[in-house]
Length: 264
Image (tube, rainbow, N blue to C red; front, side):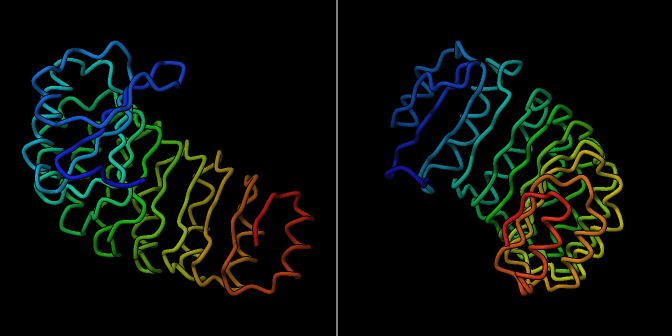
């Protein structure tokens, strides 16, 4: 996926059965001029060039949510680098976010300075079930301020892979996630959380009785961290430990014994 050609954006509306209703490259301004209330309930994605993002982003959300705030349940802005202005307008529209169930904000150049505004917006999404913020530039400092989870009692899937959280950031994330009892899928891939990050996660794993999928590939985890996972993460159905620093043959036997699907 990626941005469309300059001065263009793509709008996709998804039918309740999941099939695409429309998907075409159009002029942003022409779309806004001719926009009418969508007949279907999910907005999948919106792409625009950097040169038009600030004004177009603001207008887009004002029009969409003003006409259809009770029907929009999914926002997919993956690969849209809308920067500080986009984050600001996103927050300004947060009053309309109560029905959002799926929010995808991966690979959009989120920085630490954006996290507080972003957290405030996400707090309004009391029905949120899926949050994707992978492939951004969030470090331990930023993840410390990602604190909307106490308001997200329905959150089932969290994807924070390929940032720069590290072991210290993992401690902050674990502190913020303590009330996420409905969490089923957690992706932490490519964050170099190391064994210390697994130790911190193991301390709160009992708070996730429904956790069934854990992705911790590319995190510099050794045999020590793998042992902790095998011993403490008993509800898992699938575990991705690939591209870490493990004794593969040793832990393949251990994980097979626990009847766990895994990738080493």
